[in-house]
Length: 124
Image (cartoon, rainbow, N blue to C red; front, side, top):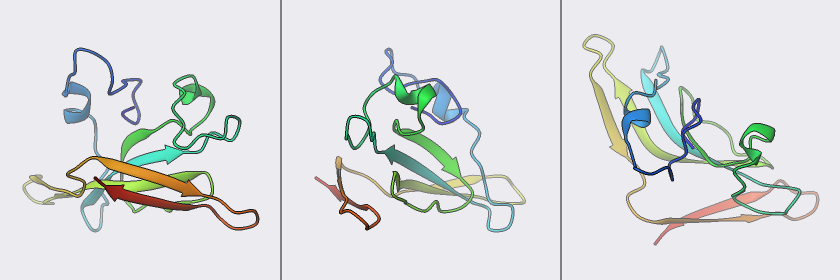
């Protein structure tokens, strides 16, 4: 799902409108924006990543692609992976994007009692 909208990336026909015109959040000092995918853990059904679209409004655990002015920290429930980094020139407002993920991606969550969950990502 695209953050800040109710648009699922699986909607057909596929449209780039929402992402292209989605307002990216740039850091006012560094002028960088991090395009992140947030994946959450569904503690009711013990699923990671949470794939239940009903959880979009009830829980923040459904996968979301969003923009952040800072690097977000992975915790016990949510994990984040940087898909791209964008820089907006403060004078011209021109945006340069560096893509970080270029292949298929898999992830795993390992949680041991008493220890914060660990997340692993790899491309195939």
